[in-house]
Amino acid sequence: SLPLLTVILVSLGAEVYLMRNIVLTTMTEDFVFVARAKGLPERDVIYKHVLRAAAPPIITIVLLSITGSIFGGAIITETVFMWPGMGLLFWEAIAGNDTPVVLGLVYLSLLVYLITLAVLDILYGILDPRVRITAGVAR
Image 1: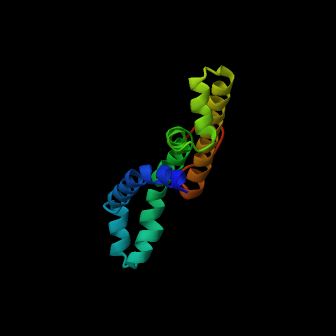
Image 2 (image 1 turned 120 degrees about the horizontal axis):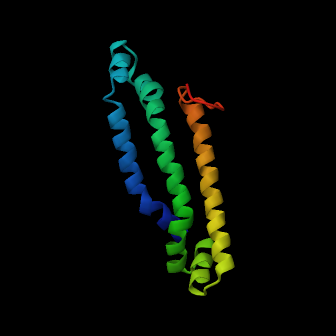
Image 3 (image 1 turned 120 degrees about the vertical axis):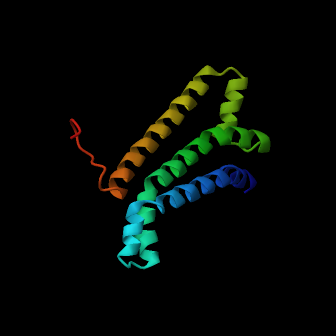
């Protein structure tokens, strides 16, 4: 539908631009030159070395962008299209000075944001073996 398409397309250009720059910057690193010097096929260099190293910042951008557009972009989009949802509810609660609803939606958005950060931490441990998930003092 048009509201969903609007939310996606608004941030898509900036995300693609950032992803491209992250991958291009990673391709200039020394370990990529070493992989190419070893004679690895270009496909293996890209998929096994470049994208694996570029994945954490790309995952961060994508997940935080999705989380931000769920709440921030939804308020504007749902208000413009009069689409019933949490964004429109948030806007109407602010306009109507409905403090309990505003606080509930702020707490809910905070909870979603914290869950997103926890998922990001878990994904970092999976994607990058140098990131350790341990309790206590870092060594």
